[in-house]
Image (cartoon, rainbow, N blue to C red; front, side, top):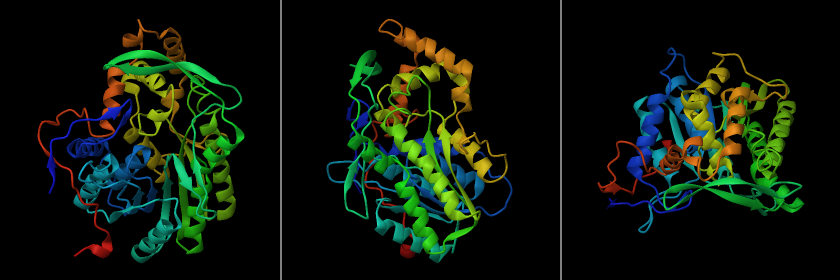
Length: 401
């Protein structure tokens, strides 16, 4: 037991600690927003890679509650120490596992580096022993670095433009007050571009398919999706036309390669999600300002990650038609890319300055959303009460008593 009174510690949008009670409350709120189960049919056997945060967490919660998903989630999180809390994803996973158990779901979690061969082997062993084959793989990883298991080389991703330098407005908070800052990033060189593709492209997704297929674990009609993003032309220079965009293009190329490999026995595609405040997105320059303006413009039409995950699951389960674009990508971003919405965002972006930022963008909402990624600023949580920081990772089937 390790009861502590915890205070938030952060550098900009990065928090160095998390609040277990707050993280639990965040998961509970997402669970309550998830649709109720549709019928009593057994759910698919699924592997969710990146199940503790962002769209991966949302897809896990929707799969468990609304579609009776069985299977395994993989995340890479850190436990609490004498000096630090556990990572937010650790606490979120612990609560997700409790909700899964309460719902009677046969689902467990593996903590480890999904890029490694060891985790691939362990996941395959668990899935083979418990289920035989899997119906679905959801790939949702955003990482700063990746060690290539074949070469041992460590690749580091960068967030930079390609071709020309990038100058743009950015949202910063000075003493808690929103301010407009100016950003200047130099263009990436070829080595930085290639390294980012190695980390955030489709290489690891392909390795997962190879590993599972070689062990005979892909069911007939197997589906796999990888989460991606396109976004607005406002953010294109730093996103879709930058190093991350090169990685996302590689991810889409990988989907086509996997389809060829599956030879009609399954299907792979990328999923273009809409904007969201996630631990990954807050690291991208200018995205904070863009997302704050977008939320101001969309209001009640804003689609949270759980809403988008519910739409995705409905399509994967056959309850709704696949919403595919001409590049065979599932689109969940129609609410964001609506021409009227984008025109309004573009106008507000152009006018945003020190005098108008408070009215042109939902800056308070954005700041609270960032805090909630780590369990802070969650309505209803009493942060003056000591919280238990030493929370066990969910037990694996082999350790069940």
